[in-house]
Image (cartoon, rainbow, N blue to C red; front, side, top):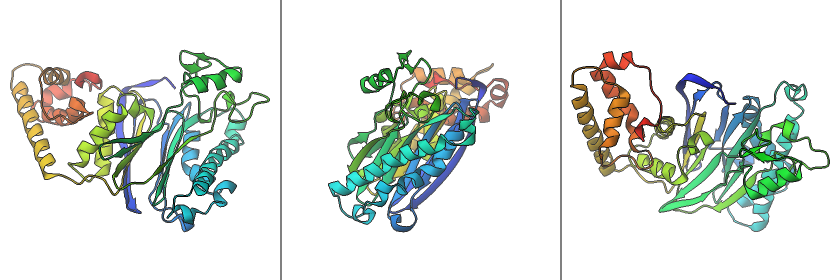
Length: 387
């Protein structure tokens, strides 16, 4: 869980798609971690009766990748096949907002999480003790009129509406009063902000060594598989939804990330490129974890702006001029030196929420072109040098 590589793995996995008036792009990167433990799901059109619905999810695994991978393949079916979900008229939920229907779907989502957690306990690798992994999960089930976002752990979902953040899920950390109370009631403790001094999240799927307290139900254990479920009525001013693991949120606030994403949406419609830009920026801001993000744009999403593109071009021309001047000097020069000089100067128009970190790759490309002998001589440096 705590092991790191000497150099981050920056290759990315990307997907994109569209359906039901939604467009999505996603990016995931292993980063500094020894193993890639994140997983994801993305379906803009669900099959059959749910053809007007979409499902997106991010899973942040720990102590191994098996549980996160299994959840990415089976959580949706576990939800939609639950008795509680089956008894609810999803056709009604696709067109109307009725309290009874909303409650039925919420019960179905909760049942799906709990059923999946119970079923995974029977996997041979878990029974034998070979696999002790777990995963957080944040998922969104979107109908034409409603948005259900379920969170279990410290991955996070944020909806941005024109003018500001519409809602955000809340992280489940052991120090949260209600979480701490449950942990202590189950005979555990919170030390160094972790469950029994070890696990950094208080809700997760898997992690069965924390779910063996006799006389306690599945949601009363040291670690609970119960999701917290948020319901939002869709509005014309809904712009985009972000689902991401804590490797992103560790270095960006909700406001930072939404400001950054929105500024990029004014420059390009390529959601994969924006998602890649997010994880690269988080890496340069100092994230040491796996990183995964799913970006879903809604019908109210801003359109590409020629004025914003013009300003971005002017910004990059200015940065290129400054880097070219530095590279024209004699002697050795390094990326950390260049980034330090740039950070000491006031550069107007840097991407909000991303700052100079968002332009590090651009700077490095210029540096490698102008001073390849210096670029090749130094080890790649990935830190918060650009903040």
